[in-house]
Image 1: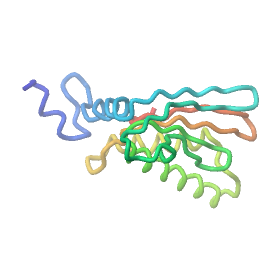
Image 2: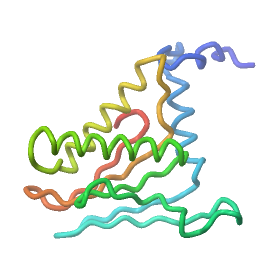
Image 3: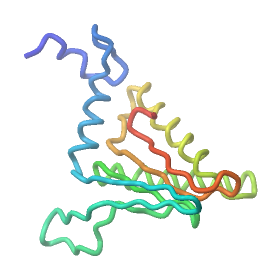
Length: 158
């Protein structure tokens, strides 16, 4: 057993080397849980995401497996990682987008949504009552002012 094993029980305890082991576990789970590779491209007037479709079991209907989601009519998301965490993050992103549109009267820009989702992910790194979601989101959308945008949000809120 390693000497630093007592530092991985809580999310907000740093090891003597300055590491948050729970965050490292979340990054590892996000990269190894789905095993997917995603690519996002931004063009002059469009943006695209491409990913693999891996069916985890032969009893699962292949058309039901997807990691590409619509958040609004102008914003989409590629979420890789643990599928339950992906669904939770997408549901929260849809809530944030609808709340923004209700409050301000226009649809949320992709950069604002990515910033909000990163802030929520970062709050999960500070509180012992919440665990970081093992999901990496690539948010793509077309902003009315800035044009097409591709943004990434990881478990640490970067």
